[in-house]
Image (spheres, rainbow, N blue to C red):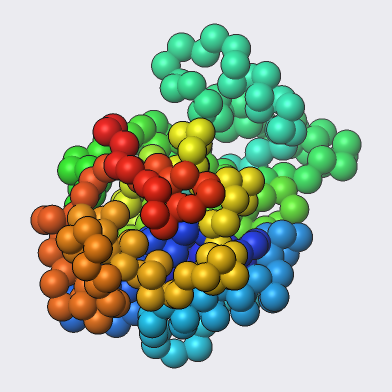
Length: 311
Ligand code: GLU
């Protein structure tokens, strides 16, 4: 069984991504699991081979190792299609012809029980004649899950129980590209991933992913959602916040080992100024001690000037 880190190769990894990767790799090793890296390059417009190479080089520089060749989602569309076919055979899939604008407008109109931002189900009850009319207009269809308003509770190692109503998520976009939520569930199961460690911006996606796991008869992994690293303005860390990538930090005189030590300290797993190495972090790893607060950095020198933020 394995842990994994699954970045999208759309740019350089920043400190927040690197911190998550360090936690994922250390937790997997400490728990006697294997560790995989998977490239979530479903979107061929934004994903680039040079970003993939740069991300892998950064992980290696931090002392993170992974098993086997790196799997790319762009090469696994047949698996995602097989999963969609299985859901369709169970009557759980419908065609959606809505444009983004129609969805925005419909979602902001008052619609009773549907939570804010949810797809209001406009296309769930289309007749065959209505579908044929949309096709004649040349509208491409996305495929959506008919979730039936199911509510799923997941357990997260950081946040405890997290409960959510599952929306009718897109399974295949209207340009034919499989959707993230489906691909991640299919791949984690196919790759034997039983521990998913990632940023807490994806906590709210976990009930819908758990729903897909249930509907596809796949196991649910142990989830660890790590609080994000924030910029000085309190928004999630980004390029505009200054020197935030490994390359930029190294150009400013830091070593990759300094990033590992910073990650261990911000996670509350080493003492201030202790300079914990990756191997040291694995040796002392204790999820119960993990600091569950987000970290806010000062963009001018993020490794030196940072603080925990109360939730
Ligand atoms: N590919 C996603 C990202 O870059 C992470 C998905 C996951 O870990 O489940 O944010």
